[in-house]
Length: 356
Ligand SMILES: Cc1cc2nc3c(=O)[nH]c(=O)nc-3n(C[C@H](O)[C@H](O)[C@H](O)COP(=O)(O)O)c2cc1C
Image (cartoon, rainbow, N blue to C red; front, top):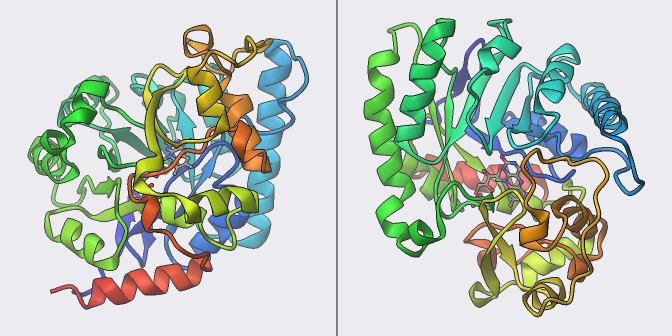
């Protein structure tokens, strides 16, 4: 198969591969620069940057996050001048502030997940900044297209995250038990039908398919079903340039399919994670009451979930993996070694070019 470029709004990427935002701090400047330099699109994460360990007021939290994001973007721009994306988690209480900060600092693509981007076109009026919602159903794509009519705007692309993806999942526990009924391929086909009437000859709405993509052949299959690109996460955690602690990468290498769990996180959504000491203690009610002074997530359910998600994601990022939350995709058990980003992209593109 010939490798088609990915075009999102004003921006073009020679390789139709996006590395998704991964919090906390996983898709940081080092990983994103390597991905951009490999001619793919990389997505900076914005969740809980800066020192989140000290008690803070809400306004200190907002200022700390903003300054840390400015530093992350400056570091990235010191390594590459290619256009990049920034991932905003809609559930964050400071989401709008992060969006404005990112755009002012030079982000050209805003990817909005874990929430409905009802007012995003009003927050980002500059039409040269591409707006890309993350969806898990064609219904949500339709809702966003209708909601944005009042702004006379359509999304510059959609990312469709299917049930095999890493991180938070936009499905109910029941739906995840019958994942075959909600397959990425089905949602892609339905979303293609929904977006078509909103497209013009000079303005396509590319669909980027995510969740469980592992080989170049997987990419070829999704492109032949109508996707314009794929988004990947899990495989790029196991790269030399990914800034997570080695123990996190080793947990991926050691992972077996039977170690994967789906849990409810304080965000109020299911998340796919690896079993560890923390999950055992959580199950047996042995986790100390979480304390929080700054409420990073507006509608945080930490009392119901029994833990603070930021604290647990930072733990695993920094190497206290047994006391952290280890997000992963459904294909994590296939990972058996660490590669460089370029090596991984080359492997995927070789597989794609030999796809019929
Ligand atoms: C460790 C990890 C953390 C993630 N964190 C986020 C996040 O903060 N925001 C987000 O929109 N998606 C997040 N994701 C989802 C990825 O951006 C991507 O869509 C997903 O991993 C694709 O599925 P795959 O892992 O099977 O390739 C995360 C995924 C992983 C593996």
